[in-house]
Image (cartoon, rainbow over all chains, first blue to last red; front, side):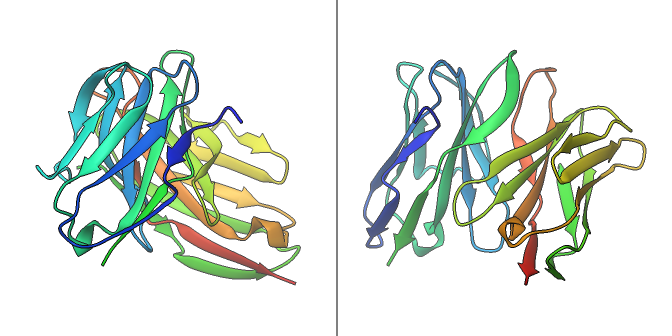
Length: 114
Length: 114
């Protein structure tokens, strides 16, 4: 399978714990995006990378959230001191800038904060 | 702030019916409008529209964009139960002229019954 992959698919944690999600984009895709989707809503943009550079962050991305893409391939999204309001589906998408700007989404990581 | 409004929010039709889903938008520096289908997983890409009046077609699905009136429609003819899903509309605005983040609507939930 050469699509976007995300790990884990599901995560249940207790309030106050830290969690980290991983996204592996489609091979050679240079842009990588993170979105968050809550029930009944469309995905909301969080941040994106071009290669290893983080180019934009949403106001939704509080200081408890941090994302990295150290080698320009996979990316991680960490949430520190989780809150119940962080419960959502975290989606990753990738695209190959300049060739096909369509964003292709991974299966998502569903986070439940108890 | 970019904004996407989809209507109706939900729709129930009988197999074989034709449906039209609506998407209106406000975006700074419009670059593209995209339609995605979302079942119980990540959004899957349907269409990307950049020019007014040019219909994109894929099987029983088609879509068209009106950049003057700032809306798009997605048509599905001869609906099947497998078309049951949430249909998401998203717009991309870009200050740089290159690919950028997507702003999504809340989606239209389509249910096709036998």
